Length: 139
Length: 139
Length: 139
Length: 139
Image: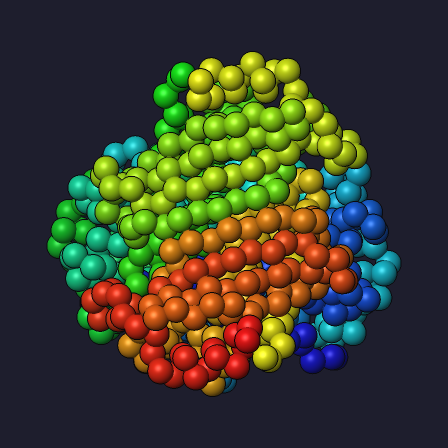
């Protein structure tokens, strides 16, 4: 099983609220950035944009859940570790763990389904996706 | 039991991705806007900003989960129905249901804890919060 | 000449940075929301989304400039007054003035050009746009 | 005169609107990220957050203007070249030029003033700022 993909986020002033920590709504947005980064990492640089427009399929979210462990701040880069944890016939689940300077900040699960770009209908996971994802799955 | 608070969101072009539907990360952000709107509704116009700065307490999120039922588009206003569903000693849970033109788009659960603004330490729910929230709780 | 269109923004905790005022990047985003609101107001509820997808033309921005006069906070609603100030053959310029509780917060100018949705080529302002905009133009 | 600081932005699906290009409001936000990156680059890793909280001064924006030359897409990284172009007694002006794969996408000018964090009053540019900025100024 391959190590999770690590995605680095620069947390800044504009991400923080008056409590001096990243505003809560930034965190699911970053987790999504990290999942998109995983796709770029395993699909020759292609993220959701190229997946949808060049490759003809999409992967819309049907579920997300997050637990927030510790505040995120601009003091350190936020490292998001992304691992696909389940690949079903028509869906995929990701685990994303965010940490700063070794401290766990959040962990989340995200479920996406596969669709055809042309008409937004459901479809099985494309073969190229299976091939790219399987090395990362838990045995 | 009072009806849920209804919060209206204008969904626009800039919220949509190339699939012509609202980008997933916009949805938790709107759910948070709606919860903030609930507080404004029951606390004389005071949302998180005034809660933290004028009233001396905050309510950071420790958990969120969302199921996405149907795409959100700019074709209709998004109505977010917010209801507190559980008020513990030191935490509160909200249900938020988003719909457009009567179609359910998403539903989510959000758990917040209460903190003192000054030092970010945990604290029980303030009395004024208990009084404001209890009429909305399920019996 | 008609009065400018007034667009109301709910400024919240999540819009603010640790200086307890709205983060600068929120302001051009709100001005754009207000311009989209102007289009909805004068085009039977249709904003950029419907303009592009149903009506076949777009209006991408080629220029913006903003002067920031006074901080924006969640203490009051932000009122954005939108007025088209110039309608050229192929372009339109808007003035947007943001104020809170009567205090001017920012003023900006925004220039858009008209394009065909299908191929992103330049085109003259559609007749329905001319008709909708002219009552608002300075004499 | 030193070369401008180059700040890389990963443009993604979620940044794009249904026209398949980055939504206009993302662009000033990225320019600000790039200016914050410049500060991190010249101030030992400290951006606006540390400037305001650890160093005791801020640099709020009083003006921005942008010309949009070519659409921004997820096809390439967006490189933002940041150069301070004028350092006044109490203000600083930045030029930011964004390009993708060598094509100019936007150029902007941004003016900030210096303030004391404690009370938001105006102040001269701190000496450490003068020292950090001067090598980048046009002769």
